[in-house]
Image (cartoon, rainbow, N blue to C red; front, top):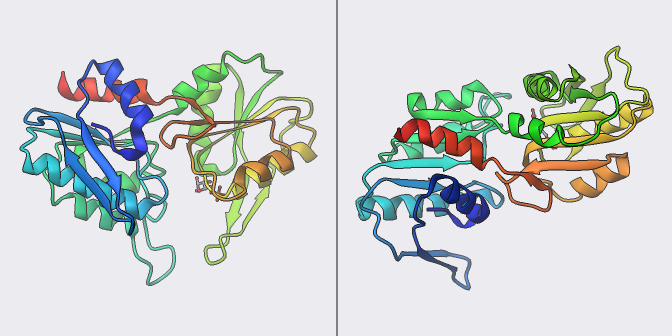
Length: 289
Ligand code: R5P
């Protein structure tokens, strides 16, 4: 069963796993309220795929409507796949008095008897803790690495735009047989402004693969792209799992000098060049074996 935001990924997953699709009617009333009506039987185990993409709060309400239907119509086990977990970046109180939003979401989901959760690249280990031992995380980066290995890259280096994303850079670098490193990034927690600084490494004339979990406003990538271009990088590829691409993020990245943008179908867009369906399918197979 796939929610409105995961139609493509849900179909790819059902094909890989040879699962039947659950049919439902979905519409939005003129005043903006969502309506769902289940049209298939769900009295067996169900895999619900529903990405919490913008508008996140609406997607969250839809998720609870779908879970309520599955519970009312007695789905046996529920495996909930949330490819993009909204609010995962608010996983602690960075400033006193802040809400830990992802914890609220995890607490609300505990109202339903969800057997397993599957997430994709959840930003930090802290996030998983809120969901307990029923949570599994899969990564898109091995698939992004496979995708990039088909390119003819010139003396490539894989760089993370901050230290936190270095583990993703290492994964991709290993697959394409390149070096990896990271840029030092500082973010002002109140204004959100980002400053980046290149460490001592040589990118002159080389293709650079930038990798991060999320591209939102593009600010992090843009700083990195500008620095890399200033240091003589050849082509810069901006790769991420979750391409939110808010506002003019894409155009601003091209203006900064990016050569290409590669994201996945956790958030479906023009730049969803890699599908995370194989990674999620393996996770589900390991659950239902
Ligand atoms: C932050 O730690 C994340 O890994 C991303 O670097 C960040 O969320 C990207 O946001 P933006 O595109 O707005 O800079």
